[in-house]
Image (cartoon, rainbow, N blue to C red; front, side, top):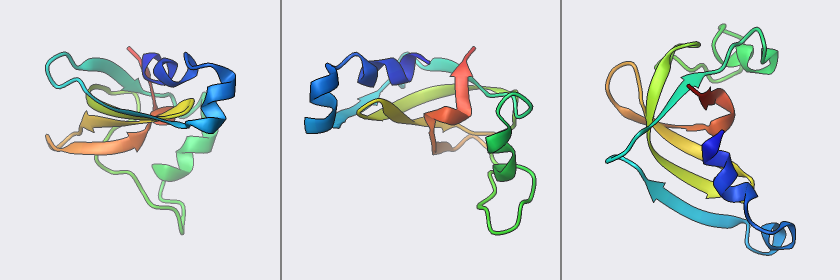
Length: 100
């Protein structure tokens, strides 16, 4: 996913010494992403299927496309802000999404 590439483009030796690379706004040019397939990523199912003692995600829909309006990179991982199903900006880990 393009969002995570920003972090992984850093030198390996720099990743540990400076893991935070920044917060980026892309409201003017949103990035289109889709929530990943839960069948292909079974470790994510528990966030959507009512698993007890797991915080449930109810404002995004598996398989649906969303617009990333901001992202924050921590080394080689990122959190992304998307406009959710009720029109609000919500932050999620980038592992929930793939480029569409």
